[in-house]
Length: 337
Image 1 (cartoon, rainbow, N blue to C red):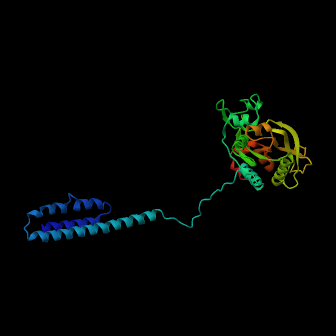
Image 2: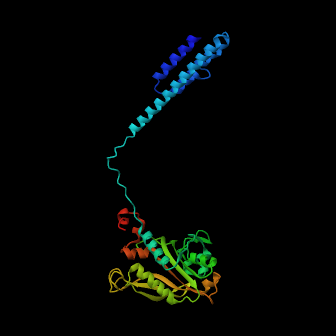
Image 3: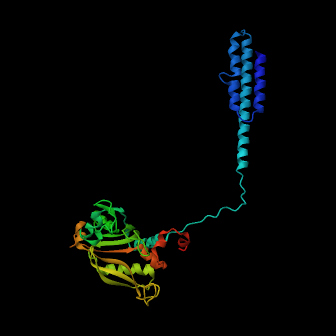
C-alpha cells in the first residue's frame, strides 16, 4: 500500500507540473470522493494495527503534498492568465485620443434661462404645472367662455371633452391663485401646444413664459415698470416699450406690448419692417372674474399678467427668420449659439 501511495503522489505531482489549465479536474481525480487516494484509504481496514498508523501518516503526507502543489499551480495559472490579459489590453498612452464633440445649450434654453434669471432677480419665483390639462384651468378659470374661438378644436388639441394639451401656460397661474393667498409673484415658463400647421413662424409645439403678480394696490404702472425693466435687461438699456390697446378674455384692460427695435434703435430696418417697433408680448390687469373664480376678492386685490413666446424672443434676439431651424437638430445651426 505504501508503494501505491508513493506512486499516486509521483503521478499527481507530475500531472500538476505539466497541467496548463484544468487543475480542478486533477484535484477530483486524486483527492475527490471517488479519487485514487480515497480509494486506497478505504482499504486501510485490512491492515494490521502496527501498519495502520504508518500508512495513515504517509497518506496524510501525500494529500498535503498534492494540495500544496494544486495551490501553487492554481496561483501560477492565475498569474499567467492575468499577464496574458494585460498584454492583450496593452494601451499606447502616446496615441492621440478621440476628439470629444461638446454640445452647446439650445438657443431656446439659453433665452428661457435668461428670462428666468431676469425675473428671479426681480423677486419672482418659478411655478410649473401639467402639460396635459383640464378644460377648466385652460379656459373656464381664465374667463374664456364656451363659445370663445380659442376653444375650437381647430386650435386646441383635445384628448377628451374635458382634457387637452394646454394651449398656454396661463393654467399654472389659475392653479397658483387657487392654492396660494396673495401676495403672488410668479413666472411660468414651459411647453404649450396648438393645432397650427408648421411654417416659418408657426409650430404645433412651442414655448411660452407667462408672469403673474397679485397683491393689494397693483396698478398698470407696476406692469409698465416691470416690462420696461425686462426689455432693457433683455435687449439693451436704451430699449423703450409702448402699449397698444388690445383684448384678452383674462385681462382688463389689455394691451399688446412693443419694444423699440434693438437692431436700428427705432429708426426702421428690415427686422422691424421699417416701423421701428417690434411686438413681443401681451399683457394687462387680471380680470376681476379670474380673481373671483380662483377665490381672491377683486375688491381687495388686483394684479397684472403678461405672456410672451420664447421662440419669438429667440428669433428676434438672434435674427432667425425661420422657426423650423430651432427644431431640425442641425448641429451646424445649433453650434452658432
